[in-house]
Length: 238
Image 1 (cartoon, rainbow, N blue to C red):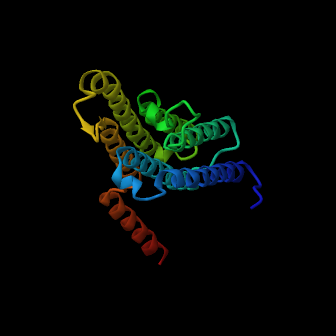
Image 2: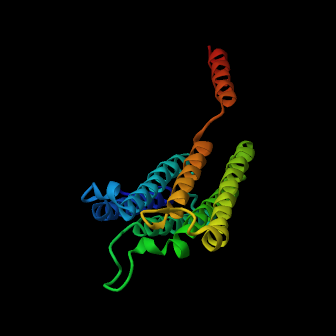
């Protein structure tokens, strides 16, 4: 592919970075899932396998969501289009960071595995990612505000959905850091270790899936209206 303009160059760059991130994840997956029975016989094995699965859900669903959005609203060759690309790069860094957190290999001989820093880093990765998503929606709204005026309300609704899930992730992080950790940290254990992070992995996964469903789901009423509109156009042309 030979990108000819901004609307082709920026997506090409993001797809290339996605490819690098997914390629890097294969090395991490090898450390996490080989041998595969480790994911079923130990707490750390199950913990890292679930975390890696969540990272894949975020990465793959993000790639699909980006493809859908950029097909309908490519980057404009102006300041807003350039700014949206900067946010794209920020999201890619966060996705790469999320994947790297699941790597069980110690950073050095005296340190713990990366994911043992869950309390300090992982709980804030999702608010950061969804904060970037929200910024992306805002920029896209103003970028196309005067181009597709009839769809301004729809774009606001989509941005509002992102804001709702951003707030949910912020609330989740606050609960984990300021309520669960200081008061209930030892109340839930598995194999002698704190199991609360696994609970939050499941809740994070549920929020990510819910977010993608809400963004991609087209209400049945709208589908019916769209079909009726198409039928009227066909009738008029005949």
